[in-house]
Image (cartoon, rainbow, N blue to C red):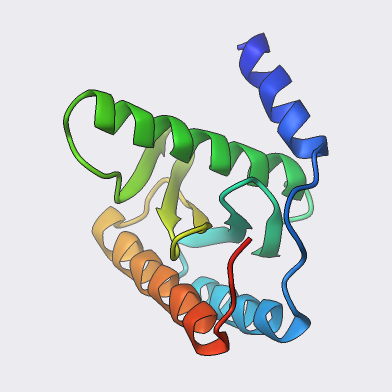
Length: 150
């Protein structure tokens, strides 16, 4: 696991791409707040670029924004490679079921990711449906602004 931590540390300290305009960030943040407020099972959410930069987040104070951004990017990239190598096609989303809750990583357009953290007692189908809807809204925000995701 030390190798994985080293990779995440390196990605965390790199700065690729550009910051999105404040209006886009505000709309994405509103989407995240709505997602969290509409579901008691969702405890945190973050939108990141696929290269690991945080865009907007609704996270508890004990979450390291840069670290979780980098990990979301790395784990989705690994799952994409794994699915292709196994002949399963394109990765739609990634679900991590853990003892104390779940983590969903979904693509929100071509180069953004939505990562959601849930309680352990969550209804996975319902929270995944809410999360998919939020990912689609984030993608639509980018389309509406004609933004090039970076």
